[in-house]
Every structure is written in structure tokens, then in C-alpha cells.
Amino acid sequence: MDADSDVALDILITNVVCVFRTRCHLNLRKIALEGANVIYKRDVGKVLMKLRKPRITATIWSSGKVICTGATRNWLLAVLLSSEVAVVIFTDFKVVNVLAVCNMPFEIRLPEFTKNNRPHARYVMNQNFILPCVTE
View 1 (cartoon, rainbow, N blue to C red):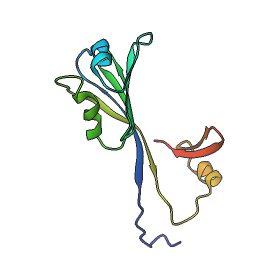
View 2 (tube, rainbow, N blue to C red):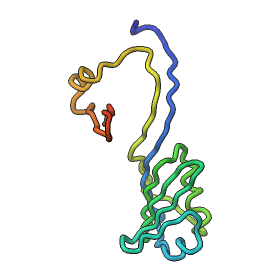
View 3 (cartoon, rainbow, N blue to C red):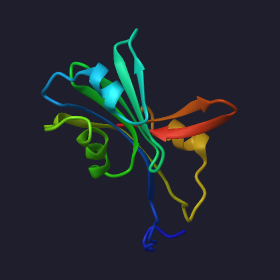
View 4 (tube, helix red, strand yellow):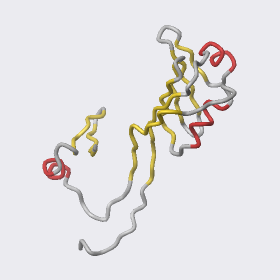
């Protein structure tokens, strides 16, 4: 394939992991009693809030720290807490990981790619198969 040829790639973001704080103390007991799709893990001091469609999981601590996995758009994060807390202010918002998939118009030889792009490229073992990943 030529380096000059332009090919449009369809990149699909399938998972975003982000961390943020709410700038207020959260009453986990109240969230657990009044919230829907909530699992209260009192021994660990956190609440798991799960949505089915879209498939999002938020881990919420009483300090206001929230880790959200599965969201593909930023506005979905607000849905998790908007019904549980009257006013939510997000601070220290960080996207920790993004998983995207696409079909490349050429073959990628993973061993060569990993060898030529160290330390950014590596293999991740996941159950019975190997996943290639590139990190910053």
C-alpha cells in the first residue's frame, strides 16, 4: 500500500475509563438506599452503580472520587450521578484509558511492530488470547 494514498478509517470507540471528583462528600448509604442499580460494598467503603443500556459502571467513594468505565461519551457520566445528588460539580476529570477498534487496510505484524516501537507498544495477555496495545 502506498504511503500517499488516503484511506478513511472508521474508528469506533468502545470503552472509555475516566476518573473525576465531585468536590463534595457523598452519602453512600443514601445513594445505596435511594439509587437504582446500586451495589453497596460497605466493607470496602464504595458504591457500584451499573447501567445496562448503555453498559456503564461507576465506582463511587464517599470522598467524592468516581471511576467510570464503559462510557463512550462524556455526557453519559452526568447521567450516573444526576439523579442521586442534587448538584454535582466535576473536578480533576481525567480520561485514563480509551479502547477503540478499526479495520486497517493493511496487515500489521505485531511482533515487528512491538519490537520497533518500544516502550510504547506491548502485548497484554487476556485470558486465552493476546491483545496488542500502544500506550503513551
